[in-house]
Image (tube, rainbow, N blue to C red):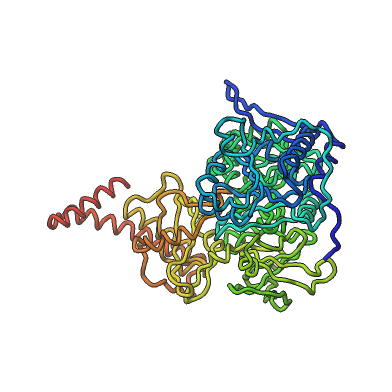
Length: 639
């Protein structure tokens, strides 16, 4: 491990303010005028730096000290960014928790963070009054808002009063690359949320990668569709545009507002989940809108469909622009990088065949390996853990592990989770000596070209008596059906003896209402699956009545754990609960595939069922048969 050096991420804001004082630092929405046009508040880097100094003076006078953890629950905007940099300048540690994770998880995270100071909106202070135990370590508090009678009861002071009248430069705390810089909690999409501890040196490494490897340069304009990444922008010399959106409801974002912000401010870079771009890209195509200022679109948090990348490159962006899909997590980011043009040209067809989603090659200084999948802790790294390439040059599918300067080392106050997720590497070479491997909880493999392919979360794999099924390679096959919005592969039953169940979220107005429609939809899906060896044994199909549950932070990660519970309750509704069909190799005539025969069988059965229902209705054998026949007749008319 390298010797710690003096570094404080907040110093970069002061440097930027001195270098380009009048460049816009942050632009934040401030409602709309009577004609519906966006209004905004704008601060230059000089003004933002002054705000940072004023809050740093006020926080110090309030009693905030170097090393204090400060629970910061402030809505995205000028105050949030100024407050984060003020805390970093003091040497205090901002604690960031996603409020949308639910009350129980939120209170648990607060208790584990053990904050000394609380700065937040009134509802958080009210929560503290109702549930005081998780807030027991807090000695001072400030509420966002004016000094009203209610706010004076809720907290010691207000955020407005913390803004000191002093504007002289606040001396930056003498932190080092090994000093604690922030605590950010994971979304908890596949388990309990955990506090990830960042050091100043990790921020330094992340900023260097975003600048040198990703190519984000001073003077650019970033649309912060993922707010957490906006905190890097002042250190990069990049203008931050906060979009007019609810960050907890990105699936309902108004694409017109996103386009308006890009066109108004000449946005050059935008980082958001694929959920957002699945709304923006079609809107641009439908309205013949191109976004020539955008030279880089970054998408992460969930697998990115190659078709979405192709739409952006072909119909929305300029010829010299690109779409990139970096791989990472709260515990380690960014890790890999890949051009969208390479995806469209080389890997998209392989993804469509169920080989996973290619996320590119490791960034400079980042070490990525694939190891055997196991649930046990691995205390110490050994090179023998790594899965080696087999015939053809690709590795087997395994668990992805990473090491490098952006990789965090511990979970806050969770030693058991730390032991399960981290592998110590005391024998690493050079700068890697004393490093830590992080187990991503994701599964994937390397191809012969050294590119990493993502196959899903380790916790979401389905273990059957005949082998293991991974969600992304399987779901991609069924997502090709034109009436499918998305799918989720889940396992029903105990580990090792699970039955794979495919849960379908149909497109709007395409939900199969009748038995005949369900039968036809199911057979068409099975016809897709039977063409590939890894999806042939998936025989149970359920149609989910609504939108899949997803994580609050990105609205992109499907909560398969919840869908698995739902599938277990509704498994009897599947139309194909017989044992999986074995499909041995057959000598079919040239040009004929098993799927073609399956589709022919689907059409035959649909026609046969229609004839059967009509016949039973016409014959009218008994009242019960008549009722069944009537239902069948109505269904046929509806179809």
